[in-house]
Length: 135
Image (cartoon, rainbow, N blue to C red; front, side, top):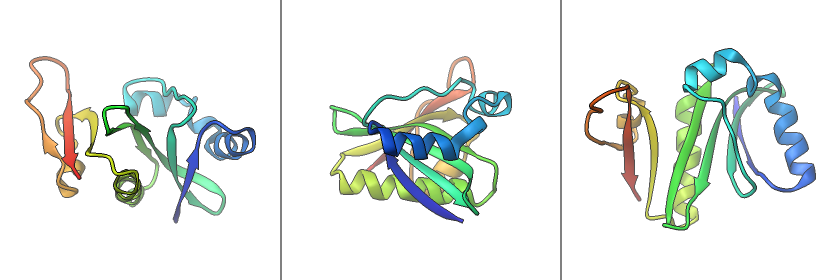
């Protein structure tokens, strides 16, 4: 499995990106796993875990004006994909000279700790919390 990077916003790139993602983006299983229906804008950086020209997972990184990178979505159908995608996002955020990278994920999502993301306060309600890594 390899990670492919796409920057959304150009017709050819978008056609290849969304062609690879296919029905994964509109799948009820994806929406339930993420807790939301994914959305994106031009300038978003997508990382896809691809095997035999089939996307097995994705991560969307949005560089912010605040010099932070927001990981908006991480979804994988293969167990090795999340770590590969997070590594790619950290590498990209470092190359972009972002000050930190963060996400909102479940309090129980310990994969972020493996990459030295710090856990925000336990949510008073709900299951999502802030995870952040200073670069």
